Image (cartoon, rainbow, N blue to C red; front, top):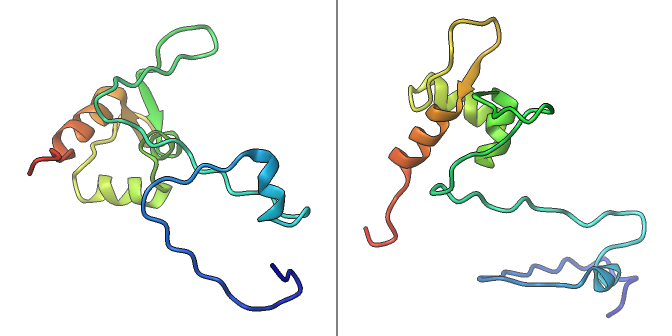
Length: 114
């Protein structure tokens, strides 16, 4: 492949592509790090995150909830505004309970056979 060309290449992949880390250098220049995508969460697994002292977390900030759900902060904000997620009104900053996140995932998950 001519690396000096300014042509745009569009690649559409349907499915899964696995590339060894050692082969990424061929696709990305030295000064650019390869994108790292988070693993998708399975909604059927219970959320188990512990604090530093080993206690289970009962609630999460909006940023942490976004990370758990694999969405952006603004999406969590919109879900709360639309009533899909409920946050605690007891503290200054919005927190979402672990049970509420699990309820949201269960109620909004679609079956593969619908």
